[in-house]
Length: 186
Image 1 (cartoon, rainbow, N blue to C red):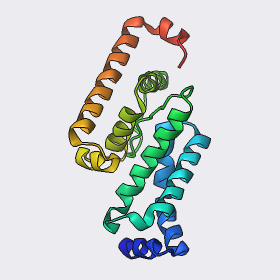
Image 2: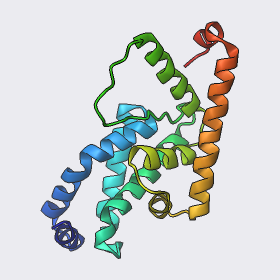
Image 3: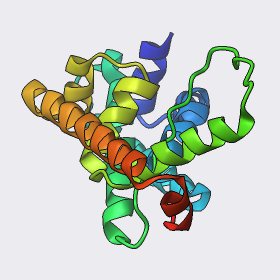
C-alpha cells in the first residue's frame, strides 16, 4: 500500500503525497519537538522536511525506504534550524509510551526531568539526533546510521559520547547540591 503511494507521489500525484504526509505528520511533529523543544521551530523543521521530500521524491531510489528517508530529511531540517539559531540549544525529552507509573514523589519526578533536560542542553545537535532516533523512535543503531547517512561507527560514537556527557552532567549536578542547581538556569 505505502509503496504504491510512494510510486504515485514520485510521479507527481499530490493526493498520494498528501496521504503519505498525513500518515507521518504526527510522528514527525513529535520527533521534531523532542529534538528542538520549541513548537514553532519544530513545525518549521517539519514543513522544511516535507517540502524537501516533495521536491526530492523523484530521486528516492527505494520506495520501501520512504519512512527512513523522511526521518533523515527531518533530522537534517532540525539540525539546520538549530544551527541557524545557536541561542536555542536542542532539548530532548525522553518519553516512554507505556502507561505512566504511579509517582509517589511528584517533586522528585520534576527534579529528575529537569536534570535530564539540563543534561540534554549540553549535547551537540548531532548527538541529540542519534539519541532521539535510537531511544525515542526505537530505531536500531544501523538504521539510525543509515537514516542520518553516517557510518555505523559514527552513530555508535555519537550515542556513546552523548550518553557519557549526559552522565557527566548529571553527576556534576548531583555534586553541586540542590540549592546550587535551583539557582542555575534550566
